[in-house]
Length: 269
Image (cartoon, rainbow, N blue to C red):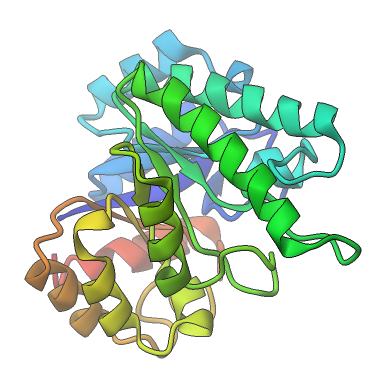
């Protein structure tokens, strides 16, 4: 397995779930010096970065860029797949397609978390799910042409009411039935929604393409009550050898949080 760190450009909202939110030249250098294997890039718009510059930085510091995440598209751009307004839905689909094109330049994949949206109180869930499946199918077909996977991330009930647990997401991924639609468990969300993190990981098995790590308090692994040795052992047992990426809050400060995460995880990976 490899260990990644979620970062964002300096213009990202302070609410973005990343440790480093600063000039990417600084963040990428820090991640490398701390011993990370890669960085996940949280973007609201592909135009936020200079592709050539980021490619150079990734190569210079011997890192990978495995995933581009889209949580900021939902939080900052206010567009998502299930929105009642067709124009907003279309904007979300086009933005994800833009992210796919960007990801393909790094041989990366694209996270589908909160950008999928939620179920409005005044609408039937079945109708909203139809909009979600339509958007996912369109984006997945587009992504297949670029060799990019879409990684569906279950998110806890306090952030969305659509696809909360890994067990629920397994059925969704299987229902979509596309080779390039995979699962992205996040153990922070699993701690809230899944009866057993370990059992859900075992059930998800071959569908898992990427994993988010954060402890029970969304701080660095080792700072809460999650049993990471058992989680990591389970991932190894099911044959997972991809990235586990720290998507954590910058407590007590960004540099300390990033160092605590890598130092703790290197004991087991």
